[in-house]
Image 1 (spheres, one colour):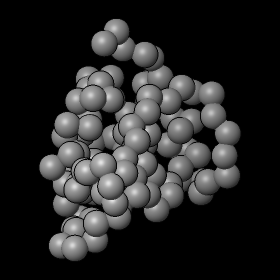
Image 2 (tube, helix red, strand yellow):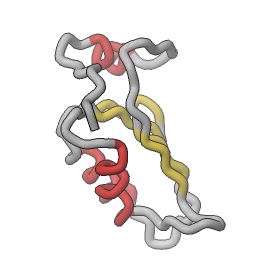
Image 3 (cartoon, one colour):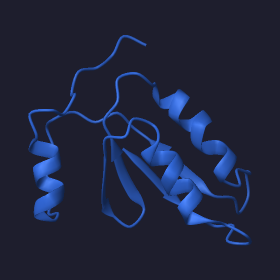
Image 4 (cartoon, helix red, strand yellow):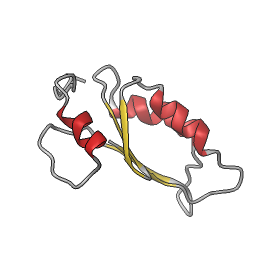
Length: 99
């Protein structure tokens, strides 16, 4: 799961961030405005952060915020049918890689 809060809007370009997220594995779901799910065991959370950091303004005060977390198949929520289908797909990779 990737979730963010863009605080520094000067010259921020969402399409560039979106393309970077989509490019992590090519297997993604964007069910809520600032939340993405990316199906990958190739990259660790730190790897993903390093890929996205160039598109954000990271600073200790008034900077953009981001959280990257590995999810399990146990979840609950109220989302669109497309998002639920994505989560329930037999193709989802729910294993925890040995990083």
